[in-house]
Image: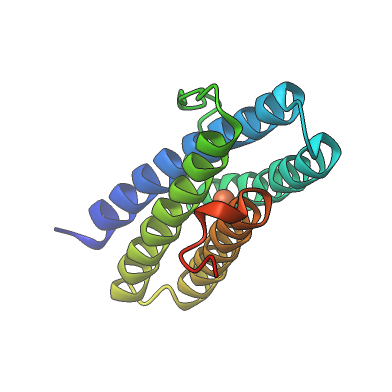
Length: 152
Ligand SMILES: [Fe+2]
């Protein structure tokens, strides 16, 4: 594959991730609004902070796509809407972990192209996704202590 073709395929992958980011912003916003019951304010704060971080990443991705000569998508991906709050946060933690793997894979593609700055930025986003996943999994353990592996 020519270098140009490889860059185009990387732009297409970045656009898939931008669509996921846009979906994440909407998902966290929806979840924050729907949160109810015990610890509602704590939960809203957590989810709003996640939405804000996703917006930062979406802005960075859209800029990267434009810098590389692509057209950033404006269409978000759809997402599941679990009714139970615990399932909701578990879904979020899992999706953040998936995103981490996706950005690591994209960083490897950037490394193959010797696009070092892009590689570093994608690795930084991967690290942020890992942090988000850990924070959400931690929130599940804090809010539902009985689900922790060690209970006594
Ligand atoms: Fe994320």
